[in-house]
Length: 311
Image (tube, rainbow, N blue to C red):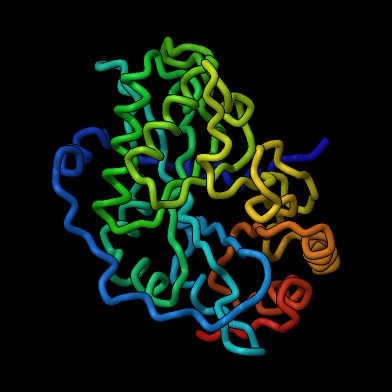
């Protein structure tokens, strides 16, 4: 059996107990004023799969994603940067799910001018991952369509307020049933994604293909598979095609943890991505060290070029 990298638990485990519903009051119902600043400079031409980098912002800066370019042509190594991670929390008083940011995620959002805009100005998309937090609230157990739509609005308002490029769903650590919450049902995630796509038709919605939500993509004649821009394998160092009805160009069967997955495996998975015609390559845990050797292991296969690290 594959083993999930447990370091992903840190963001949930160290989430602050500050009630984000109060903080969120400044978001909901407010006209978004954030912008991405100067127009993004066209990224140098790059042929090959979309490359994704998750960053654990409890420990690392989002700016690291922009430090890697291709030796041949100077294009960005990474096309999508994922802020890992906000949380779906549960308010036992109102009995409602709400979007929560720990102090490190909040710091990234509050400092978008230095943590997010520089990436966007290079042509790199920045999305916010949302993760369970052991409180019973998850994407698959909203008690009603109205509740799912309300959470979708929190997500889309956050994207608008902070000038983000989308939302990534990661249905782990919800611990469905805690605090008297319900077990997963078939309708919740369909209602949530449908509402979110309606709220932000031109933004990214991606699926970290794990958990009860990932297996509940159809309800009442509605299949939300096509509403995702990307779906990827959640098991690092392995090859597993996500069971989502998307074209190969939107799927990442390969997943690697930078610095922990061997360079030979990294290269082999990249080679297979190209040879089998898939369009996305997922990486996790990019830190602040010079990882050009690890990154070059996949860029040589995906793009025919080494990666260059610039401090």
